Length: 509
Image (cartoon, rainbow, N blue to C red; front, side, top):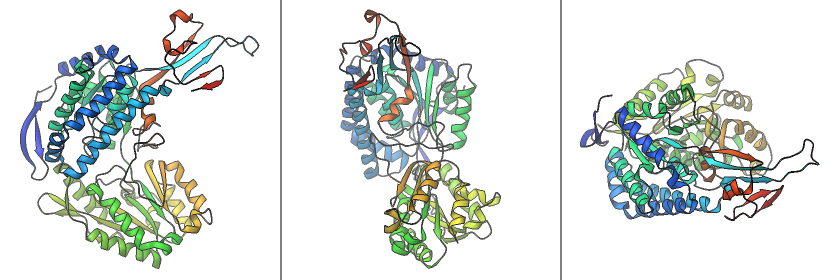
């Protein structure tokens, strides 16, 4: 493996700014994984673990000005957006600290012997333990929230798993700064710095997923890259869980009644959502089913006006810009596809947002129009104009899995009248989060959140956002007939740690 230099690149100009590091060799990947593996014991104490997570949040917040400056130089996402994302990242770390302190994630269940049951029940005590070293593959579009200190890292540490992060090449300097901040926080709690490893380079990412001491992986990125790593994780002599977020179209259905009621508001809302962050959100609404009649025309007019007023922006890197421009051109060249607002190149380094329209009938069978049912990363959406409800159902039946699915209903439909319940039932199999009369851009960090969906949205049924993200890095184990003196404190009758648990069928809090 060649030790090529790793450069920080300015997306506004495409020019290299500074050398940050060199790509990790196979030996360096091995060293990082072994150091993380050796640090497992330092995370065994939940009190230490939660204190570390809170200190990490405090340290990141204290370094906020420097971190945001570095992030903006490498991503061009802007200080306001980045400061908000950093605040979200700090909140997420603190939220997982609270989860660690509460202890419900351990899922403690105790059954005492019962000879009267058929068959008899022996003494059984079950809880969850950490898997081991977790490989985290950073995302480009969220340099804080889905990167070195993001949700995968925070939830893995909360579970008691050390982490080795494969840095994203779009923000290598920021990755180094964040990793150093996390290691500094670890040192304040006598946790070895190896608990957070960081490697750079494509080949390093391959070596990482193959390493025998890596017990699980989390990924956010493209379908192509994620699928390659997913296959590599499954092909190991000992396969490991691979929790990948790969790609999502995030369909929206606008009923005829909803369009008749508020077409202009829906069009403006769609414009704001699909161009937010220059269309680089994983939950951007990339496909819309809207009626073909007069109400639909009003929606398209509103969308046209709003998107036309949206300023051009810089994508995260020039490769993404080139792919976006080519993707828009390929889609726009299809017969019967129109472009009310043309998306594509704008200036030397920026892109402008736009949208395409197509008769929904073109999407009801396999063929060249399948391209319109694939994600196009950037500020573009496709509006399919349907003639009747049957066309809506036929198109929905052809959609792949998604992170989100949205329906806009009229007031009466939202109250349970008409097709409201039916459409909701049709959307539910397609996505992990189903929205009514809203927009998917914005994923709250909350206990009830689910950020995942059927393949190719994700490769598992888990979430990468919210408290239950911790479950990805744990496995259950049960002790049968173990003497009290040999049991871990979590499973003892007197409950010395004060954990919530199910004790002989009764839920104790």
